[in-house]
Length: 480
Ligand SMILES: Cc1cc2nc3c(=O)[nH]c(=O)nc-3n(C[C@H](O)[C@H](O)[C@H](O)COP(=O)(O)OP(=O)(O)OC[C@H]3O[C@@H](n4cnc5c(N)ncnc54)[C@H](O)[C@@H]3O)c2cc1C
Image 1 (cartoon, rainbow, N blue to C red):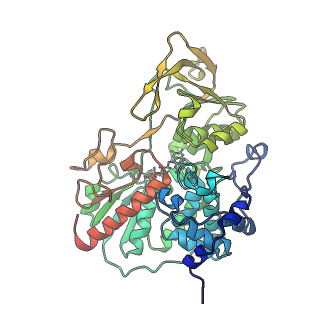
Image 2: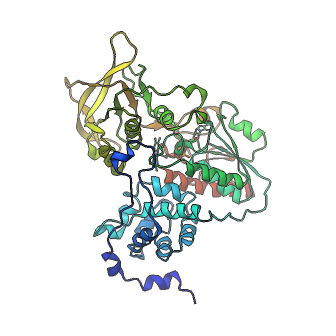
Image 3: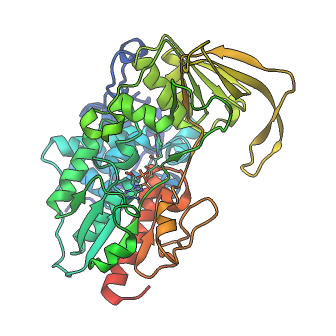
């Protein structure tokens, strides 16, 4: 008789498991990886992955699962992995996660699953993210994922705006439910920030390609170079016979500093810099085909994950001095500690508590030559709970730079809100939607960064799953 999960868990020897040393995920050394764009992590082999999975003590409360926005059954998957049943482990992850290969690579595990791992109270937490990525990669390389059963066609048509993680997740779920789905994307290729933002050294774009090929096999159609609200409106889509529209247009508009000299040559917005550094011209619109003209000294302004992606791209582009400047202290930085550590290992310098007040041009030229900063000190906490940076009068100083990247956050573009009558949005442009993505317009749903503002892949996926369920219900019952 097969041993059930519950029986297996009862016989767990937690003390023995706690004795097993952490198996560090193999990764490229800094001196090697600065010369290539390959993923920093090279991936576990099966035997090492099984040992690391065995470190999971199968605690009944599974705080890792609770902390995961998708509530992946992490202990359940690892119980299968330690037995060598990798496909079974992949099935467990896929039951809740449409993109385990991506989440394993991109989630801030230290504040989600791994941050709540009970093993982590006494030792290094189980490497949940790297194991999740291993399981998904192994499945792909050993037979691929099993195609799901697709429900009989409902004859209903859904237009998905945006092919980021939210749009792709909604498309998958609705296609499996038997609806006809077409994804409209403004860029020339799919993936949203997964392609047009996140560099290859964090996640190889083959994972996006794999997902899109899989969706095409499910019957999902893709239309690129199409900006909804400009090329055709949401009402135009509904008039064309779409029964529902999903808005997954993300938060892709980079914030500007608004200081003198910001328009000088050599100064880039983060996405402009990242996509031109990372992508072949075939995947860029024609106006981005000029290569970026990086010089020797790169300054990146901002303290989140995007700024780390920019500095580390600058290193790989051959900049000799790369400096990140942030207006608070390192303790207040929003991005992952691991990304900062990787950047420091790769030679990036940091200046804290300073903000640009002017970009200075080279004499007689229109190209940036230096950034004038003003020192900041920390005042009272602001609405984010972090201490507010306050300028120190008379503290200005210059940092030489021939290339500058502005990476100070993103907002939602207002185009869809402005072109869709009765669609309610906040003052910041985020679409007003309830928990399951229903907006003020019947038949129009939204989730991901377009609703939350700039956030995470995993939260976009979690919200998109709820929205897909609501769209399915709407299409079947006409209820909003
Ligand atoms: C540089 C960078 C690095 C990041 N790193 C991480 C990370 O390591 N881990 C993590 O969890 N999160 C990371 N994030 C955040 C994460 O990528 C986003 O939270 C996530 O992609 C949001 O998914 P989404 O589907 O809502 O939107 P997006 O991924 O932004 O996708 C929206 C898509 O909609 C398209 N679109 C917009 N308007 C229209 C329109 N009018 N018509 C048609 N298409 C339109 C856009 O072109 C885009 O392709 C990062 C973000 C950036 C910018």
